[in-house]
Image 1 (cartoon, helix red, strand yellow):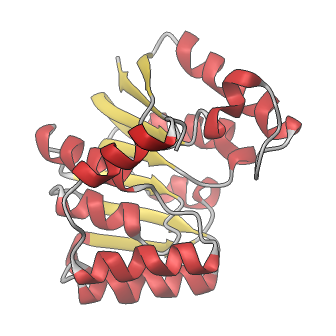
Image 2 (image 1 turned 180 degrees about the vertical axis):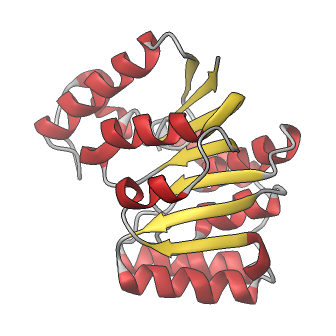
Length: 210
């Protein structure tokens, strides 16, 4: 989290206690170093999917399915892309155990390839949380899939604060920082998006397609 530890701990404590399955998924992510959304970010995804009435969502970066689960629990049918076979298989198992197999379409495929198979303008919500080097390309692909008024969400846009301080830290190198700052500027200045940035989790960008 980018908040000071006492504040971050307090915000996390305000989230509902995860059920046994979600707790298992989070424990695996922590144990194996798998990048999954933080609890407040997952809560945000679920609430936004629910309050916008999103019926169809597209996700770049399934990992083991934590964010996918939150979006599906928010009421959306989620088409999600993942390139790691082991994580893709784990996500399928977890989401089946959650009773959500009929609410997800998990694809072992790069979003750049799979995008052509999806309906342009046919999605209510898009979530980007794939490899950071690909964010620029994913932005173009996901925005094209959103209907006017559709909601775009992008995780990790503050890189643990490094995007603001420009100081490499943890997993974020100087190249990551430069790339994310360029991405954020690009997102902010697009004429077809109305964007804002929230200090939730590791930083979440929210944008509405005009």
